[in-house]
Every structure is written in C-alpha cells, then in structure tokens.
Image (cartoon, rainbow, N blue to C red; front, side):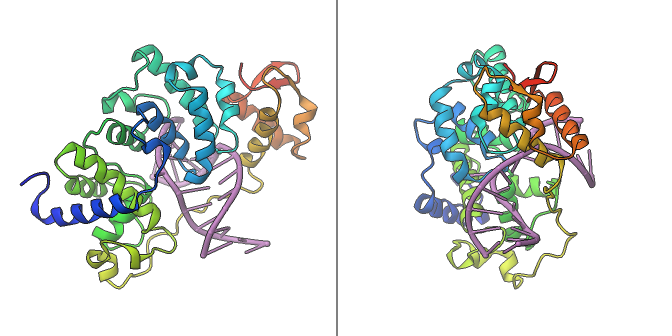
Length: 298
DNA sequence: CAGTCGTGGGG
DNA sequence: TCCCCAAGACT
C-alpha cells in the first residue's frame, strides 16, 4: 500500500482527480503563496465568500507582505483596510496574530498546530487549514463545506449537525490519507468539492465525481429533518448599527477625528446607538480620543 | 452551548 | 421581496 487503506483508496483517487481538473486558481493557492498568505486568506474567508475576499486580499498582501509589516501598522489601519468584508473584529484579531507571530515566533507563521491554535482569531478550523494547506501537514480540516460533503457522502444526511461533533472528527480522520502531502491536497479537494458542487442549497449531483457512492443520494436524497437551522437576524440589530458607525469611521482619513454628531446621524435611536458605539470601543475597534470625538485605533 | 458578531449576492 | 448563507471564533 502507498498512502491509503483499500476501501478509501478509490475515493481518494476520484476526488483528487476531480480537484486536479476543476480546482479554482486562487492567489493563496499559488506556489508563491507562503504560510502568511494562507493565514490572511483564511481569516478573510471566515464567513465571507471568495469573490468578495479577492480584491481586499490582494491589497492587503501588497501592503503587508509579512506578519511584521502588519504588526508595525496601527490596528486601526487593519480595520480600515478590511473594508466591507464584515465581522471587522477579524481584522483586529489578524493584526493581533501578526503581532504575536512577530514577538513570539520571530516573524514566521508557526508550523505547530498547537502554536497556531494559540494565536488570536485562530480556532480549530483555521489552525488545521494553515497547518495543512501551507505546511503540508496531515490534519482533518473541518469547515462548513467539508462537514456538508461528509454529512451527505458518509452519513446520508443533507446537512451536518449544528456544531461539529466527535463523530464528524472521527469520520474526517478515518478518511484522511496517510501520506501528509496527499492528506493536505485531499483536505483542500474535499473543501473545493463542497464549495463548487456539493453546495448547501442546490447541489449539482450530476457533476459530482462521487455521486455514485453518496449515502444521501443512495437514500433518495431525503430532505433535512433536524432542528430548524438558526437564521441570522440582522435588520434593526446592534450589528447593523455597529456596521453603520464603523463605515463612517473607516471613511475618515487616518488621522482625522470624527465628531459625535457625525456618528449620531447613522441611527435614530440614541440608546441603541450609544450601546453599539460602546461595544465598538470595548472591542477595540473604535478609540475615543476626547469628549465626543472618535477615530479608528491609532 | 447558544448568542453574538457584518455584509452582500443569488435563488 | 425575502430568505439563506458564505474557508468561524469567541464567550
């Protein structure tokens, strides 16, 4: 045997061949893309589609080609450059991760999974993704795409459970090729299959290389039966107000101060407005400079 | 562990 | 139009 146990071997070959033929060309997958590039892309891709990440990613890497470059900039500049990607705390965490990498790891993105996990903004998924994609290590990489593919292919369910379970980790590990290099390509290949073919809403099973062995299809594609999946409410919430406030602050020049009344214009309810602004300050996304004057953190 | 945290595009 | 959801992390 080479890398894989017999039953999974055919599955590996099939998915890897599909990936070789259909993988998207993305900048963080180029041979020139190092661990930092992979890490930046992973932060930006948390809950944000590839298409919207691309332009911001390109500018970001030109401006801050290494962790030390970002660490040397004010955190507010990271928030500004983040633009409208959403969840701007990710920008703050990426800046904090760059600082930690610079201070604790000599400016090199760590290779060790536990050290990656210890970085701000790096959870189970991102640690495994960087270790796998950038450092070519053998890790189960469980993101929403992979979980959905395995739910269908292996478990016969249309959707995975709400939170990642031990059973899912066992499945992912059991299917992981032995050879690290193969495992790393397998991880990104399964993810790509979920992103392009085995999608959440309308999977294109006619184009799926493993449709013939998909447990969900073989069961007749039964509709999801679990508990109703949580819808994300947004309109009228603090999140929307925070977004509007931060948009105003991003639009200001770096050293320009924004007066309270400018912020007051974004939302009619003063109570909610104040709560949202306080939250942004507490999160470190906004810096109060003086009485009624704000800016992005310098 | 369920809630919170942005934003925009496609069905 | 409205609703879903997109390479999650943190509390």
